[in-house]
Amino acid sequence: MKQMTPTAFHLMVKPRGAICNLDCKYCYFLQKEELYPGSQFRMSVEVLRSYTRQYIESQNSPEVTFAWQGGEPTLMGLGFFEQAVTFQQKFKKPGTRISNALQTNGTLLNDDWCRFFKQRNFLIGLSLDGPRELHDAYRVNKGGQPTFDQVMHGLRLLQKHGVEFNVLSTVHAANAPFPLEVYRFLRDEVQTQFMQFIPIVERENETGFQEGDEVTGRSVSAVSYGTFLSTIFDEWVRHDVGSTYVQMFDVALGAWMGHPGSLCVFAPTCGDALALEHNGDLYSCDHYVEPDFLLGNIEENKLIPLVASAKQRQFGQHKLDSLPRYCRECEVRFACHGGCPKNRFIKTPDSESGLNYLCAGYKAFFNHVDEPMKMMASLLQQQRPANGVMEWVSVQDSKKLDEAFAKSGRNDPCPCGSGRKFKQCHGRKRS
Image 1 (tube, rainbow, N blue to C red):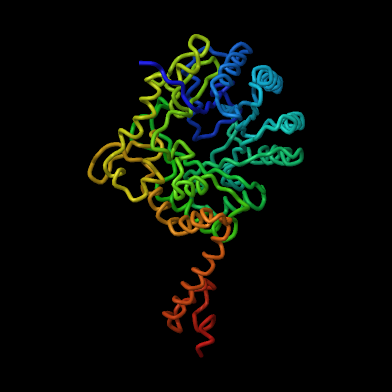
Image 2 (cartoon, rainbow, N blue to C red; image 1 turned 90 degrees about the horizontal axis):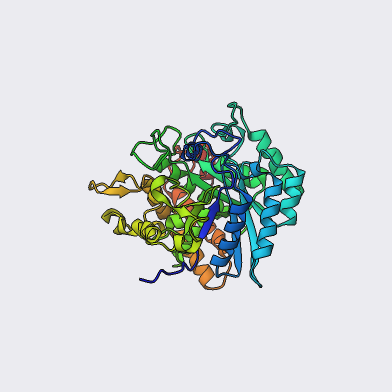
């Protein structure tokens, strides 16, 4: 059978492997150092050159995005990325636009880094888990000391130099109870327009691999994650549609509009987002940097055949083929598709294996946002801006409040939330 060339795929590149200057307590990368004993964990110029050339050759779109991850990629030093940009310009196809995205903890940023990012139009993803006490709960340095001040210093440098950035916040046991504190801090103090909220689901084992069915105490519970998202959504849909962008909400809206899953987590199948280690080893997924999911090395095998291999296609198709009946019959399957396979390790109510640990949270969230999502989808299909949903929600809120007023007794708490009795608040008009 002729091997097909993948139409599109995304590669997360880790030039320093799992090496990081921090010691975040929930990080699943740190144990990956054990996969390469004795390694210096530095991508060589030869591997960088080979990767750049092959990746550009493999892409058929007018824009090619290089995604730099870690560990902490800035540990490679500025010279590495200057060389990377040089190779990109050397190998790019006529008419192709090259872009770069780099995920960082922000603690090593300085004016030189930020000038480079601005000059070369890098999009920076900054890891920040909320206000000081929530961020510092788990994001500490090698000495166990808090990192909030260092991260905020890096953030202000990005802003000073006009570097485009977004914020990635993990949701864990420490910050999950405080959704509005996290959201309002990012919106009002950090002043980012783009946010991601990634759930921490950390397996309780010694290997760091995706095995076992117990999670650590740092992990967010399914219900807490659903509540976290729903609470932020309620704030966003009333005040911030069109001005603040939350990845989860954008992806959900796409599902309500009938678009294919734009995020692998919520697509029917996966396998198009791979991970490249510092030495050229290619893995099926960023979450599966494990021996069983090693596809090969791009210095020994060509990138395209590895991505298009039967092993990788089977990896992606398994997400759909292993979906439990409980998920197949679920009313929000169109938006969820079972979630990420790495989290599908609990049993369904009828004892079938393969249910996502976060199922209860996903289900609660997707049902919670159903009506506003339908309204936004309708507005967009009419070529009208989605922020019109805010007026619709305001009308719905007023109707619900009027109904609550009508049912309230004089000595009941006022439905407006003032904390006063109804007769001392909105009920005065009845007297």
